[in-house]
Image (cartoon, rainbow, N blue to C red; front, side):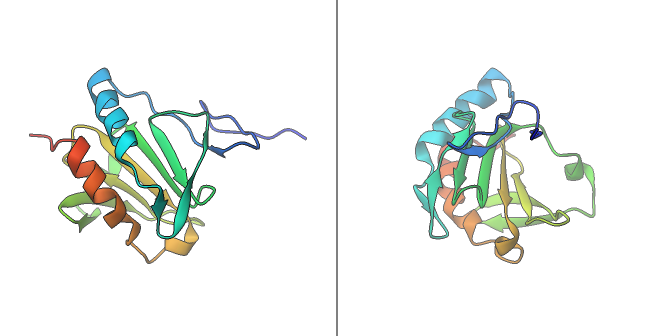
Amino acid sequence: MLLATAPGCALTDTGTPVPVPSPAAEAAAYCRALHRELPETVAGLARSATEPRSELTAAWGDGAIVLRCGVPRPDRMSDPQAHAIEADDVNWLLEQREGTGPRFTTTYREAYVELSLDKRFAHDTGPLVDFAGPVSRTVPPSL
């Protein structure tokens, strides 16, 4: 049986497959700082491994919540009809995805932080609060 994965992503029994972003050096430094501040549990889910392992990615609950730091600026940020959510002074662009849960990406920060949530969080933005403090402390606002 052949399994397909996204580029830069490996599928193993040891962790959630997560494509690793390729940010510029400055953004990568912010992401490494964020990685050290991430919570061990989010929405009652324990932190789990990602594959490949990287300081630019993290997961909780076997991939129910996936964080990628240093992602490219989403095209939807240019859309005046795009929806945004604020959680504890951190702004997030909301992207609804067919068949899965929402994806949120920070706005107005020196590095873009992306959170992908599974279906159980389709109408729950609560996990954003768990990330607001770490993002505020480690990824400065853009000017």
